[in-house]
Image (tube, rainbow, N blue to C red; front, side, top):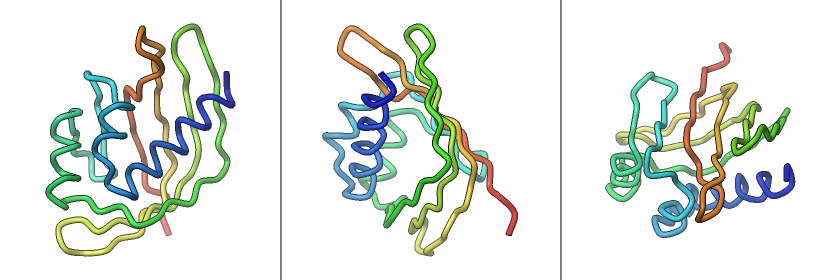
Length: 121
């Protein structure tokens, strides 16, 4: 099961970088809560809208220390990431530790939650 979640994570990161709204829409849970490193929170609709409008333009992601645990119908993913993103006209590199949750549903695994905490330089 961990391998399946790892592949879904790779698809999600790839869709974010490609701004592939269709793929992201398929992967994201309708009740998504995406908490950014600045503590702002997006729903599925607001997150997809922000990507569509270019508010978030993900350029690259480098993950490490990824640990996946499957517990019943949830998958908990922890790791570190260096994310390069253009946000509101400025390019940033965010180095953070993150936790995300995938939930098994009747239509497959869906990305339910994201929370990241910046790692001080």
